[in-house]
Image 1 (tube, rainbow, N blue to C red):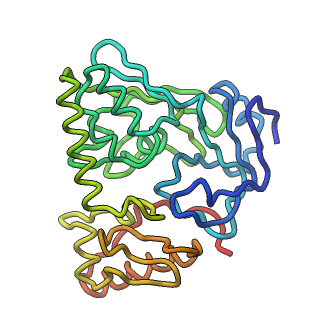
Image 2: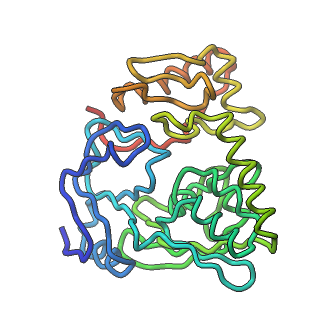
Image 3: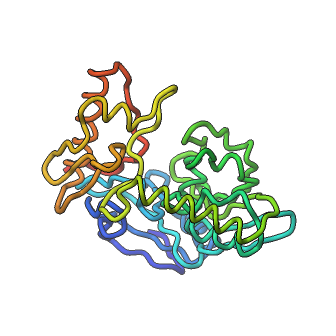
Amino acid sequence: MPDTAGRLTPDAPLAPLVWFKAGGPAEYLLEPRDVDDLSAFLRGLGAEVPVMALGLGSNLIVRDGGVPGVVIRLGKPFSYARAGEGHLITCGGGTSGILVSSNARDAGIGGLEFLRSIPGTVGGFVRMNGGAYGREVADVLVSATVVRRDGTVETLGVADLDYTYRHSNLTDGTVVVEATFRGHAAEPADIQAEMDRIAAAREASQPLRSKTGGSTFKNPEGHKAWALVDAAGCRGLTRGDAQVSEKHCNFLLNLGNASAAEIEALGEDVRARVKAQSGVTLEWEIQRVGIAK
């Protein structure tokens, strides 16, 4: 492994870092000190070594055999949100959606309230064009700074990312280290009211206080994934300690000691039942990474 000014941990447990609280370790976990440190590390890392970025772990199944290569976690040096002129706010790749929307509120920048409902970091939701409540990152992103797998640092405009539904063209091993979003002028009290509305709606409809992983499947064209899952009789379906949420059946739960294999297999059970019932093939929205055990 190349030298780093940050922290490099071999055989690092990942289960504590992901919402499902399941899965195996990273071969190496890197927490870089800053962008230059990350860039230098990736430049020195053999091209054959896989690299994966990890945010809050809310949209991730880490398989039980663990993740080979290097998992990169952007910590405190990458957690910031700085408001600027023109209703812009620039945020580190490790910044939570809640911190982005709260700092935007304090600066009187509206239009970013929906980010408080995305359970992840800037790096994650910029990569996957995260969205909620009728808006998505493509609507508000101005630019993103990334570190490529070869260590090259590059700033991309929103058009460069070729956004589609829950997808960008960012390649494996590319790490989003900063992003700038544009909102509009608004009163902080009005922004807070909208954030409160979104929070209440999310609390009422989603199993937020469980070991879960966010929305499991993408909404197919013309359908809601949860409705297809419900119609196929999957609400409450279990496999070991893994369960389809009874509160919102596009969420999977770890009721106790579910393995990552049980959680993923339950998702495949759901996909098969939905296909048989409706003819629709659900696509995973949750990322599944690593080696099955």
